[in-house]
Length: 393
Ligand SMILES: Cc1cc2nc3c(=O)[nH]c(=O)nc-3n(C[C@H](O)[C@H](O)[C@H](O)COP(=O)(O)O)c2cc1C
Image (cartoon, rainbow, N blue to C red):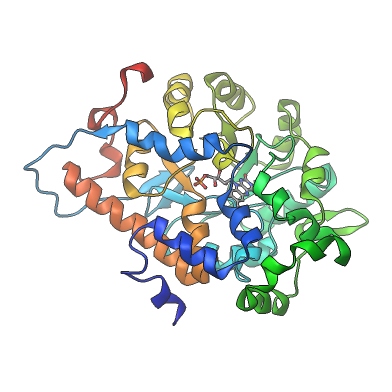
């Protein structure tokens, strides 16, 4: 079956429908890396569940022939109020990885955020997209490597730098340990051996992975005097390069464009980000992959919006699976949201066709939700369109 047919209706009607298709196409280790969260996955589950606590207040008998889904983030006009979040190791999900995701985002008129942990060169990713592309920075490989990436991103035309601050060490994703993710990526053949069956039983994926050259290095993490960092142990590389607020003056000296701080969950950190020079923040718990048992992103959003008090843009990410989720986040004060797994499931299921389909599902959801609400533009969404639990006030 052609890839686009595999993810067309009725096989894929909503984002959740991608999961079984992705699960069948990629090895268990890759699927669980994408699907899983930290420790007991409490925050992972809560990120999605919390949207049920917010209900709509529609205005009926209002005819909305056209809905305006456009928004503007940090000087870029977007056709949609959602962007594609940085997703590391996307090339393991599909050889096209970051390049095809960026192309799909650009085709839809929205932004793509490229992770530092990319298997494709940042120049190739930028060239693939007709839309804005932002660069997400980890300090892996040290300041020299980060300075090199920032400069390359600037020259290539990336317009925004996104600094992720919730990853001083990698969260423990227990599924990855059980599946031998580290051994599969960096171990000897003997280390890999017990985990090979779950790779060998996905021959289609294995062929495309080997044809693509196997485990890629990190072409955008170039250590001065050594070259691209091998994709061996990202956890220890992250632990050796934790970002702190004191790093921001150095980052600002190298990046003059707009900067976003990703990973804010409290009003206090939001104010620190403003002091550090952020033009926007993303309220985020890394999709429940870092510290478990922190609040769902949507639940943290009102406190952060209040603390920011309109000084900078507030974005959010975590748990977005439907257009209604996006509308609720916008009603609670987000300028735009980032989708992570929502498009990555599509990528793992069917490559570029899957990302196109994921974006299309969310776009259609948004249009329908606004019409059902009686609202003609995402710019008009505010707290008056939703009920939130009294305890959130
Ligand atoms: C497989 C995977 C890899 C990720 N890699 C990164 C990364 O390299 N950098 C980063 O800032 N966030 C990363 N994230 C977090 C996303 O950018 C985003 O915060 C999260 O996916 C939002 O939650 P959602 O998946 O429920 O939409 C990753 C998320 C997933 C699922």
